[in-house]
Picture 1: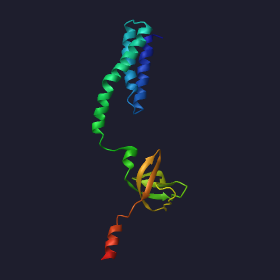
Picture 2: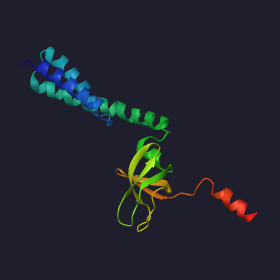
Picture 3: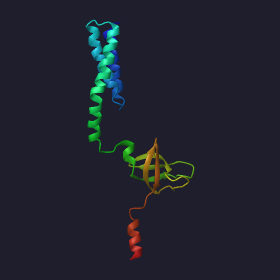
Length: 157
């Protein structure tokens, strides 16, 4: 098999790998493999092809990645995924026991949940607030009812 074909196949595999991850790293190696395929077509020996691959992959990463990370950091003010769970209100659908996780429904999704405070049980049907997420487990605390203030004000008056 011709060396340029190997580099093109490597480039395709790396671009596909990039499409399935969020790391934004494999694209640099895919680009470098494509440039190296051109170098192989030009007749460069394999040793120089490896040098071209290394220089292009590291060089392109060094020049573009910091600027891209800064640009993405500026526009990512919206919390998504697990980060967006913090502060959300849910309902316990399977009781949370002292040493046994339960389940909560938050925004239409069911999550494994534990009490944020060790040893605290929370009954099914209780409203909870997500404090944080560890792995795939939501750590929750009891949340007040939205009508609790109205009830308190009516009994005070």
